[in-house]
Image 1 (tube, rainbow, N blue to C red):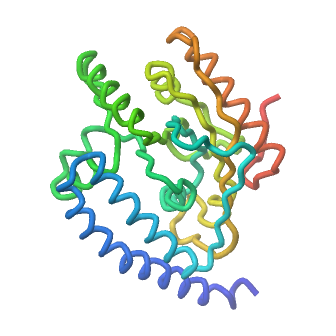
Image 2 (cartoon, rainbow, N blue to C red; image 1 turned 180 degrees about the horizontal axis):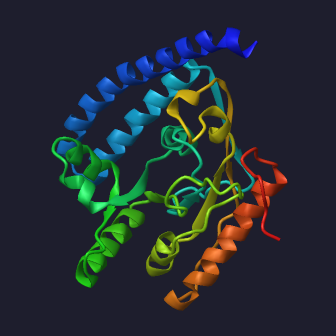
Length: 256
């Protein structure tokens, strides 16, 4: 049966990638125009165009997405969103998950790439860790973005979780930023991106359901940089427990 279905799957993947590119062309052109309006307004314009793109593309490739809220984000509040990272599809699912502008955290070096860098600087919050002074300026930029009711998104695992465990070990960055800016952490789980596109290959894309789950926020009031490790572990435990409870398919082992 799998042999018979393989040609159909190949045709599906070709169709999905073709529609991806065709729909992304107007988004790219719009992004060039939006970059004229600055980092905040222009970045929001880029993000809203990505939402339109996602609302068209996912139904076309027969992926049904739904957001589930154990606790809804509060209106007019900024968060440091942290999400698990398990698939190439995670980035594409962002505008279906976050229905108001967010800024993923990215490396400042990427902004130096011609053409792409112009879009990148408007759609991403860049952090420069090359020196204490540059990092301080980056934190001030983050504070400015967060004060404008725009949340920041971080994948604290840093790269795909290929461990067979619910989560890969977290880096400190998201939690340090949360403490430095006084912004609550809001964990989000991508439950089915692994099922829809395995991290081994982009050609594993397949139709089906997709869900993002918003967990209760974790406040950082009164915390100092000395508490970053404890905060990181607390958020890790909350996310791990929920992933285990929901029996996500990538779990092969769980820490005792």
